[in-house]
View 1 (cartoon, one colour):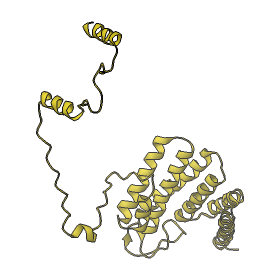
View 2: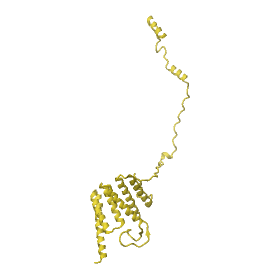
View 3: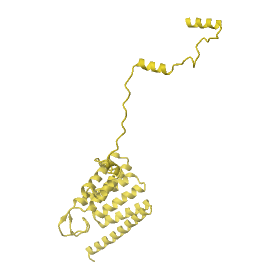
View 4: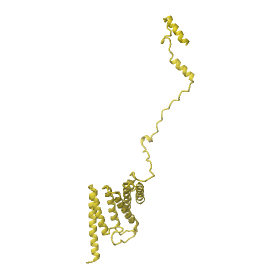
Length: 253
């Protein structure tokens, strides 16, 4: 038996087992069973490690595993370990030269022939998502400064590699955790009311000139003067002699 052929057959079998376990993990996550998804993805990771799978495949499994661990409510240290592994592998994937004839960097024994090109947009997007998942894990562990730094790294990766107009960049900028500082205030739309001539405000009459306090007192006294027709004089004419004496005595005091 050819050892090389046997080894290739073994790797193929392990890769099939890894793909099957990974598909089961995705299925369990979709039906809302994150714990079963974690078990399946852990088996898939073991099979991929034994089969010597490429960086892109292993990084994707670490990323899915970190997501399922967060959804399952596992300790933050476990999701942090998986997210950090996805970030490290994603960084290695972007740093490794990619030949135009190869299907994936680091996958397989044969290196494709062709010109060396830069990282693909999918690899950059995966690295940005890995940083974002790392930030969520730090946030779950209540390590706020590291979470903020990871969110910033995710935004820098997606903006610099994919551009400000990419749908992933715009979706990240809508998040409340986006570290973008230059937030532009939206301008008011040019409605019909704004295009027409503005309406003039009514003119407010000027206040009356100030008058002296003495004149004000005279005006109040003239306004509230009580004549004898309204209130009779005191003492009245038909008052007795004793009443008149009492009145004179009070007025003297």
